[in-house]
Length: 342
Image 1 (tube, rainbow, N blue to C red):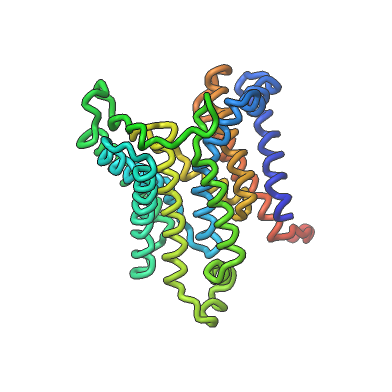
Image 2: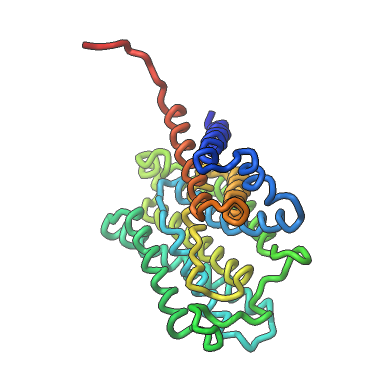
């Protein structure tokens, strides 16, 4: 049932989506066609699906490593934004370089480092002062967004950008190579698959992954075995932060090609849903990231062709998480009729 629950949640989401389209005055069959079928009609649509799924799967698998150890990193959005900012700094510094491998490698390292550095703040406060990492990591999201806003309105503002809050466009050396011609899908998708494979080995076939699993399931047993609780906290948060920052680098070096005030697109929050729908398993996360990317694309087409509000995609995401959590209740608890009592 633990693996059937996501399917039940998806079915309930579709059912409520049918009702939602009726309430909004839209033909449900047309709504479902635009939302779930039209994005996949051609090669370009499929490439956009994989493009949006890539950062989601990378962030989600990093979060899953921590979630398995009961380390609740809810601030992946902030780490994603800081990663984009760190990669941008490198891209602007090497703006005259033509060595694409050097520039992209440095951007990836800077993105990982910036995301991990931002995640180290809740890790430090949790291990030293027992601060709740949920609240700390979440509040840091808004600080990260303000950092980006300050940078694109200030020192990194493009002097030729018609006063828009954005950095200068990256040089060709700082852009990820395109994987399919006439699409925006870049080589980072292949790296995402490699990261999923590495995460599978780490989670299920490494001593460190076993330690985190034990710490998440039975903290008392982990202490008895001599596993360091502080090491587990640092590992869970730094892995999630580093991969979130790497995803941020992929966004600015890929479809955006620059840092903008709108680089924060809620991928960090959506990746939390992806991690749980995928059952914290790399393969499940891959499938869940495709579903979440489809919701993003369907929401964009619904705005364009059905005149629906921009929040329609978030509504579907929220329903999916709600029904998944509701289904999990019946996995862990059994309803029992006790009759009426006076």
